[in-house]
Amino acid sequence: MADFGTAFEKTLKNEGGYRLVNVKEDRGGQTYAGIARNCHPDWSGWRYIDQGDSKNPALSSLVQDFYRRNFWLAISGDKIKNQIIAEAIFDFSVNAGTGTAIKAAQTAMGVNPDGRIGPITLGALDTIDGAQFIAKYALAKIARYAEICRKDKTQTKFLLGWINRTLDGVV
Image (cartoon, rainbow, N blue to C red):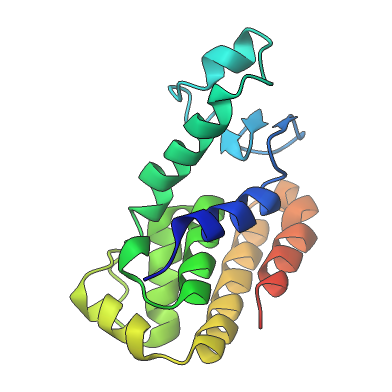
């Protein structure tokens, strides 16, 4: 089965590591380790950030728990056999939301895109060739990013970064 720790370290790197960031026009607003305040205002780590204690060792544990609970478990990462496939779905779920990431994975495999990973999706994930999945999934992710930019031109400043993040995962 896929390993959360390995997937987490790769995604954390994609999210910029343990840093506090404010990017103009980022819909998530202020972020710490990729956790967007606008999307997750009740995350317990914000109390450390707001107190100016962003170097507190407890934050890394809170970040890891947050990612496991909100993304890894939501995509059934522990049930996916192929590490590379699990990492790709996990990383995209952090970037685009779990429902979007799962639907894109299901579409890439030709499975009914219901946004939930159940036995049919897990079975398809277990049998698909990893490289084939990653290539099809990359196209689905890029199409999603293009759609975001088509609908909201202010987001085009992020498009190249999103595409680079996607292509970095292509084997």
